[in-house]
Length: 388
Image (cartoon, rainbow, N blue to C red; front, side, top):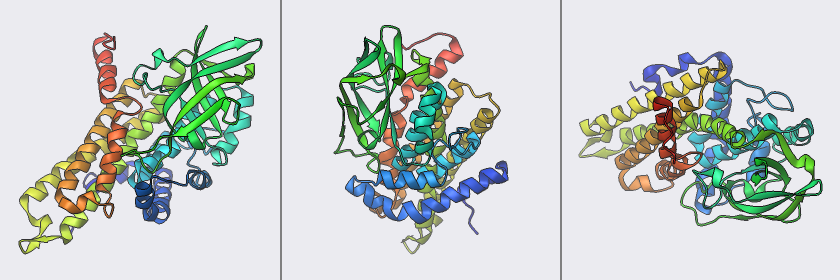
């Protein structure tokens, strides 16, 4: 008799009925709709984002933990479990949903005017409008405060000039939340992508997150009305609060990728015969599987604990950094170790291991590199900032 890795710790017993139902719905969607297609999307570097966004929207996956404006209003834990199941399919597919919901929609919901919310959130929740989040620049990733994108006043209007890099959904978006430096500090702007002077160029030749659209945004004297500015955010606290929301989803998502790798590997090792007995029957194989299951279980318990803290209103940013640092690091290690058990078969798209490993190389560093999260945790422990 065999036992699934997470069943060893009975993590399902920690879920309530609603969380479990949402988890199961997303898992079935991934298995039936996404898993049969994702290897082809990854290989071609093309993914039907608009079609998928509408399907995600019909399931209530976009902005799902937000309340009102057509959003599902679920618990944070349920949102995390949805991210876990989406990333068990592919990190790029989870990114489509998390950038839409936890970055673009979150920024408008948390910091936008009522007019912004009414105009954009219902259509974004339905997947009829796609959003992106323009913070990172080519020279300013870990240090977003150094951004060069500027917004200056011209009468009552704003004029934005600059560029943003590595923007998920950028070239298919209908609206961009763009952060720019002003005389009063960093402010956010809601920018319809059809505005003159706005353009987006898809980034190609990626080796990671190939089942996701990534773009460079260019803003060439983009003129916006005064009402385009997000009134509720001034300074870096606005965009960083959105990043914390997205990192929370990554804490769960990384567990999904690792689980998919480990379950695939256990099934393969049970069937693959070497020296006249199953690969799974060898001590070294079992040692690898045991160690990976321990780390997977710890990562899942950490994610669920952070989810409960967030639902109780007690989750602090350094704890999210602990989750993001640990779970992405361990998920990547699991993906790599699983690949060794499959040998040459593990490098093909017939199995998800190398695809997950390549994706996790990006997940490890986006929305805060491991080094950044180490410094966030270090600052919380010592009271000293080591960023500069």
